[in-house]
Length: 227
Image 1 (spheres, rainbow, N blue to C red):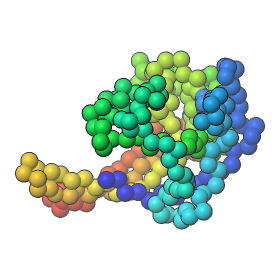
Image 2: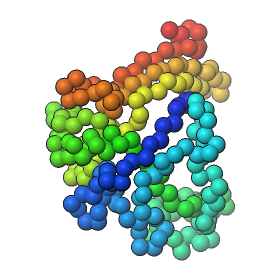
Image 3: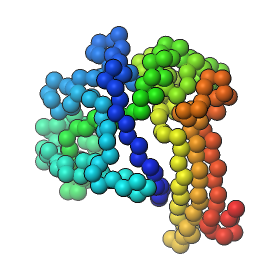
Image 4: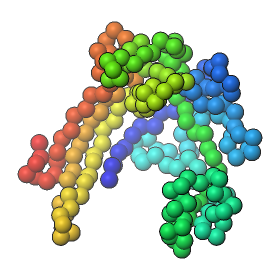
C-alpha cells in the first residue's frame, strides 16, 4: 500500500497555450484531441481541473473531484451484447466467466488533465527538437516539456510516458506485507524522497546532465533491515 501526502497545486493555463498542432483533428499542445466525440459521450478538452475541489485540504489525501458522479449504466452478462463493440476481449471474457458477480459501472467521461503553464511553454519552445539517442536509452533536445506530442512510433510514446509531468517530487511511506507460504506475514515499511529533475523549473538543457530522477529510500521496518 502506498501512503502519500502531497500538496495539490493547480493553475489555469492561458488559452493561447492550448496550441493546436498541424494534424487533423486539431490536437492540444500535449497531443490530445481537443474536440469531443460525435456521440457527445466524450467532452472536448477545456483545460482540465484548474482549481482544487471544495473539500481539498493542503497536505491531506486528494479528494475525489467528481464525488457526486453516478453511473450512467451498468454492463453485465445480461446486456453485454448491447455493448460488445465497446468492450475489450478481456472484459468480455470476465463477464462470461463470472456472470453473477462481474460487472462494469460506466460513469461520465471526464477530461481532467491539466498542466502548469511552464510545461506548455517548454513543449512549444522545443517542439520538433526532441530526439531519441543512445539506441533508445536517452532523450536530447528538450527539457521540462513533452518530447513527442505527436509520437511517430512506440519508442517516442514510451519516452512521453517516462518524462510525463509529475510535479517537482514528493516524500512518502511505502508499506509491504512480506508473506510466507503458511500465511504469516511481516510488515515492511520504508520512507522515500523523490525529485523529478527533468521537470524541475531550475533544470535547463545545460545543467540537466541526463538525470531524470533522483531518489533515496530508508528502510524503517523490520528492525533487522532498518537503515
